[in-house]
Image 1 (spheres, rainbow, N blue to C red):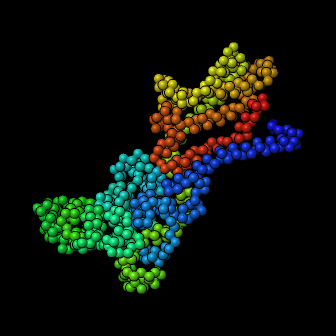
Image 2: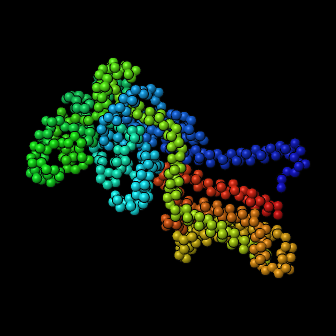
Amino acid sequence: MSIIGKVARKDPKTRILNLCIHLLLILGSITMIYPFVLMLSSSIKSAVDSTRMELIPAYLYSDEALYKKYLESRYNEESSRLMDNYPGSWISFAEVTLPQDANPAIYQDWQEFITKAEYGVYHYYVAEHYGRGVYPLAQRQYRKILREENDNSLVEFNRKYGTGAVSWEEISVEEKEIMGRIFTSSTEGYLGRFRQFKESRPLQQKLFINPDGFFVNSEVIPMVNGDLNKLNRLLGSSYSSFDQLKLPESCPPAGHPLREAWLHTAKNAINVHHLDISEDALAPFRAGLQQKYETIAALNQTYGSSYTSFDQVQIPSQLPDSGALVEDLVHFIQNKALPHQIRIKNLAQDFRNFLRRKYGSLDSLNLAWGMSLQDWQEISFPSKEMDYYSFKDRKGSIRWEFITRNYKMALEQMLSDAHSLRNTLVYVLLSILFAITVNPLAAYALSRFKPRFSYQIIMLFMLTMAFPAMVMAIPNFLMLKKLNLLNTFWALVLPAAADGYFIFLLKGFFDSLPKEIYESAMLDGAGEFRLFWQFTLQLSKPILAVIALGAFNAAYRNFLFAFIVCQDQSMWTLMVHIYNLMQRASSSVGYAALVIAAIPTLAVFIFFQNIIIKGIVVPMEK
């Protein structure tokens, strides 16, 4: 029924009033839609852009914003790795800019160099493999492979690798500081399986670390307090940026400003797999082994070798990941090796040597690259080209990855816990069942039999609405505990089985039903149950639909009370599971989970809106 009649609509004042009402309704809808759209926008963001309050994330239309997010994911959200590859340039992903001068010729030469060379796992990370509260692309790929290998059985995975994981999301390897002294890889067990995965990655998923940048960031920049002018005064140089400084392969001469920094890097900081010792260091190394083990038999037993004398001991070109040999070599380098006997195996310098062999002269290199280099040492590690062209070649898939990544994680977490989905379904169905049986029975008794204190009873029911739900949570919890009903569906359903507002609403509706229907039915021999079931409930479908919807919403979104009375994880509902997810996931993943959780409520409203509207309008007309 229209609020404004047809005749009144012709009046100009009424039209203005009608327009004002619609404008207010539109403004009200905007205030409701804006937070939801903002949540949608936040659900497809990451740490680098999560603080920007924008309805449309910039990376959807800006390549530079997308590049920031890509490097954040590529460098596993570790800004220190970014600083290693771009020394003196960026200290956070928010400062990243899209390169305008990336040279495709440099990238082609780098690809040729790195595919021919044999650089192991101590030189690169798996890109896009771990992050803070999110599952990046490579991590999802790794878990998928493990699931397929173990027939999706976590028990089989734990048996094979001797682990004790209780969920697939626990299976993750976060490699840190691979160039540092304490980092070690392994070919055994679960770490060995990850190493196989790491070695099998395509070039675009291998994040090679710049040794020059590692040296500059860990030693040089702290030495000069980040002052480039001070560095130039010390070295007598004219560098315009820190990335122009290179890590020497051998120790600088005595008196050189970088000598102490280089020695600290070689002896204490850099991983032993990036070091080599000269031939003249073998004799003192063997002497040290003889002094430590005394007999060759003791050394063979420790090393698992078959040397006949200490003079046969050699240092293999490929060191083992760990063991007595590695420990002895580290001790020798730290305490006994002379500076000139140590060499740092520098990937960046190897690239420069490759270019020298390929082009022969700087003129040929400058012609191929379109540059004007004056010295081979001016060639920097090609971090810019590696990152930019891996981005450019798959820009569309990268954008789609960021749009869907958070939702994939949220869905995976929701679907992985079948208990929460089952519990929520049972809880919702029981709540609806109790709501449309207990409340109509109470309202029918008050309306049909009209007890002497019905008004007072209704007021008592209405008074329950004056108290916040959490005020009643404590007595409800104590009562359920005394009845030994905690961690059961009864604990979820019984406290809300009877609702004062629903009873009040139903009583008013039942009072409006024509009494003649009941009188004629009773004359035909209908009993009280038949009057209630066949007449009252059949005529009350619209209002029952509204009550069922209210019960559905209350049960589906119930979090705090469900968490209090059902703390056993096997009894968690979906909202409790989402809360637990938000404690360990990023805020954007949490928003994605909330958006997914809102879909059932939205679907119920869309498909049952006619019944809902009837349930609101019909009682008003009555």
